[in-house]
Amino acid sequence: METFPWHQLSSMDGLEQISKKSFEMPVVIFKHSTRCNISSIAKMRLEEDALTLGSQVHFYYLDLLNHRDISAKIAEKYHVHHESPQILVIKDDECILDASHLDIQADEIEEVIAAC
Image 1 (cartoon, rainbow, N blue to C red):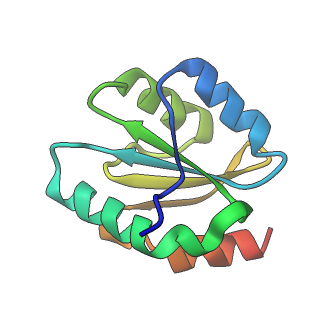
Image 2 (spheres, rainbow, N blue to C red):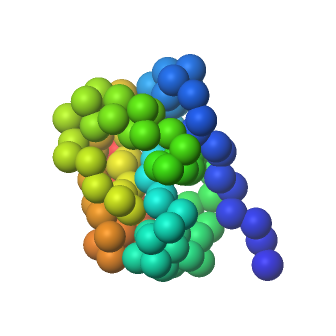
């Protein structure tokens, strides 16, 4: 089984890198609470279904319990309400998709990216 291509988001500098990378390709940020069963299910479903996106998108993983400050900055920067679990698709430093809980769907991510 292929390993999911997560990039860890663990610093404010990483958030700045996401901003810059989003001008090259869409970026997905997955905000995950390691203590939440729904978050674990959403992560597993995303990993199972989103490998087909391959090189079309960059995936970042944020551990909310260890990086609440980064999560708060994401909410402020991209004008979204904080939720967990949550995905954001960032393109040209703008949030073009925000989904949470079991509404996190790889096919929706694919549709949004295809429209970019």
